[in-house]
Image (cartoon, rainbow, N blue to C red; front, side):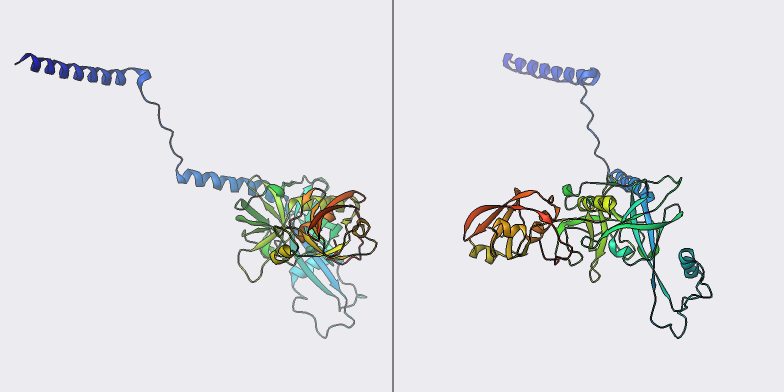
Length: 393
């Protein structure tokens, strides 16, 4: 073996010895071991957690959801030739007798008593229930049935046809009520979970799950003031007036309508609108709104370009009502209102809501575009007259 070969062999042996020492030091020295890698949650554990969230929300909110039963009495000009098919049905007979008593010998046999049903949600321990106006419209009697099957006679405190909302009150006595909390619907995002609870077709305490499909839906044709939450959570006849809930157990809307010809298309009144309306109904039994005094029309892309606007945002004034706040402020037909009180106007529905929610007597700065020129005007908001047409702002 030559000296050069010997040196090479010794170098290889030294490298092997160092590598072996490093291996044993890594294996035996406690601090040298690598940290354990965090385990990735399995799909099954994630599904279980989501399931538990749904179960928890249902358990928390269902006791606050009530069955709203109504009876409407019609008195025809002449009695029917023969009794109706349900005249002797024990269920309906007991239901009617509970409210109106048994028919006496002096009562006219020609009365028609039509039952109705819907849902509601308790929002106050004093027995205040939020429901839809169309659920209690024309009702001669209202029955509130709790999840515990206890029944109470209710009375309509106030209703607002323009938003399809109503408040019913009942005396709970010594019964401890579960109350639902109204959330902030302005922070809703499309794609969030949505849980509908109600009494579809009289099936009390039914829970269905979906998502928030859209927000700010208008032109649906249900109410005068529309800003609906759209959801694909199953909503059916009888769900009206029941809550739409998020995964935190907060009421984000009141279910009000479906598209009968579609599937998975339901609408709920957003919670923030519900708060404003029902607070007035509880306080004074009616809703007062601000009034600007203009009729408006949609601002299309073509119209916006012809008026010198960069984008189709705002509301075109088609008419100014004489003696209105808008008339006093100098607003003219064909003006485009692009801001109301510092808030950019998205469309004519948005202007409608902004003016209705404005404080009566408050001076509001309007930003308008006239003849391609921007200008401002100040209008003092008046109370909306009850006889004003639905299109008036």
